[in-house]
Image (cartoon, rainbow over all chains, first blue to last red; front, side, top):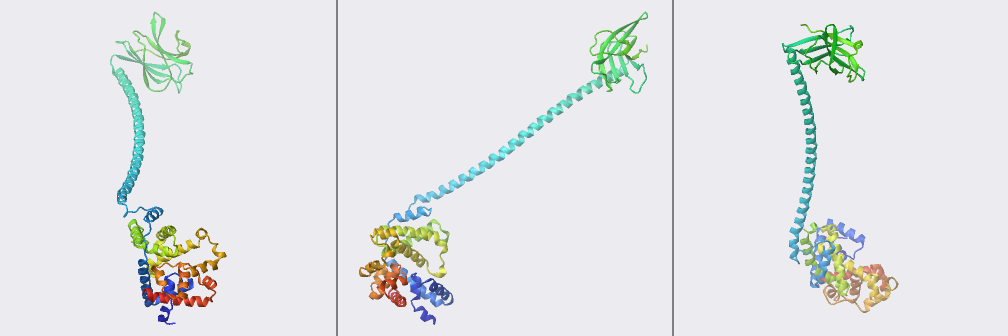
Length: 267
Length: 167
């Protein structure tokens, strides 16, 4: 079949009006791809048909357009001018949601920083307290060292080394610094072995009164090997200093059988 | 522009084509209210299927016209519509329905139908039955008691005449 015969066969009208069978449609579309004159003829018939349809046009009821717009989720922007103001409203609502989103993000960021700063300040407060405690400790150590230094370098202070009565590797050892002017007595512990928890060392001043020894307590202290200086009770007169082991908090006289160390001032 | 499916495109499409499509629908569905419902469905369908329109296969109006025609024919063939006409269901009484349309053709003297009315009687009936009532060639052959080949040939001839009349 030549193309002119095909064009005149009624297939164009059949196809355009939707009366052709699926096979005829497929064939027609294939032919259109090959023959531009067929497309032109089809187009002419379509235009004529459209023109004819416009001649028989009839206006549908106005509400149909609104129904369709509602069904497809649109507003009639041409028929109702109000809708034009809807657009900014939509934009505003989208910008509001943007603002809402931004404020939530800002809130979260602010929350994060607040939490971080709170933790940071807690840490700083703790470490500040630590530093303060260390400063206090260092101050007290320093004061003590200064005190000791003053005592040891004071020319009016007499140093009395208290020697152990029994020699051993862990022999007790201490020195008394005695200020004869102020009567202050300081005890520098070099090594006093730890005692049971119910025992304490006790420092005594001993006065030789015509062959009779009079002991006076200068205070109780615990053992240790830290080189620390303890301020003991005052002693106006002493012929010797002695350390005994006594029951904790002893208020009675010395137990001389437990004499640990002794020394005499060099006068 | 149409493919973007924006509001203005839809309004343009509707305003430009709805009267012509409504005219066609009215030629198939004579009740104006029912025809309005059909038009509404047609435009909803057009809008949803607009992306499947292929410009290589024909003009946009042709595509929409076929959607409108098919929807209108579906409507007149639907059971509620048939019941409203107080007719028997189509499947049981194809002959009497067709006989009605032949003896008392539902051809208004407007538009395409006006053109069709100028065809000779044999052709007019065939075009009316196939185009405006949606009968297949096989159904027409059965209803009119004509060989299928004759129905096809006559419809083709009728269409050729129609073309010379509207072009």
